[in-house]
View 1: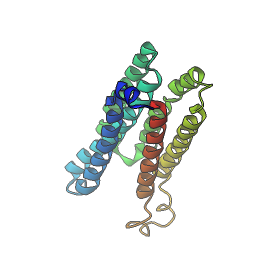
View 2: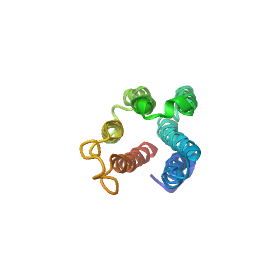
View 3: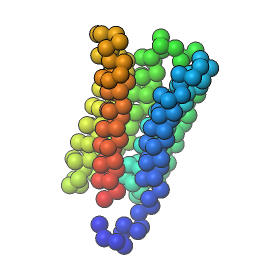
Amino acid sequence: MDDASNKAIPKWPWFVFLAGAMGCLLCSSLSHLFACHSKRWNVFFWHLNYVGISLMIVCSFFAPIYYAFSCNPYSRFLYLTSISLLGILVIITLLAPALSTSRFRSFRASLFLAMGFSGVIPAAHVVVLFWGHPQMLLALGYELFMGVLYVVEASFYMSRIPKRWKPGAFDIAGHSHQIFHVFVMARALAHSATTLLVMD
């Protein structure tokens, strides 16, 4: 890509994605650091953690959809509006105190999965639009890899493996939540690579 065409591409969608990823990790860091303060603050910070995850998922849609549908403004508006509204709905649902208990762990993970996999529709649309493009298969491969990471990540969150096999043995290292965060980072990197391909 030459300098002239590079200047014509808006960078704000890329920064929305980066802000969402950093916001998610900041919320997560604050939650893990301060949630043990008291019962009241525990609930507040875990809600903050859920908001951060939802924020990252919604913001991760902006760059690829904005760039892929730059010649299709109506589709772009439809997809970005839909994921934004879905994200707000998920955040409102997750902030309900009744859903913060461990009993609803699978339900919370399912909401995040549903929000993440709602990207299948715009992704399929992009495949139809750009099937003959040389970088399409590579971008699609990154997105499929990200989807696999997403499922594995949610599986660790719901199953609580390996700590459920040997309670107490993984409290410091190897905890399912730590493994979950490794997959979050890997997914963010895969998504970054996809977004850069779509920008090109």
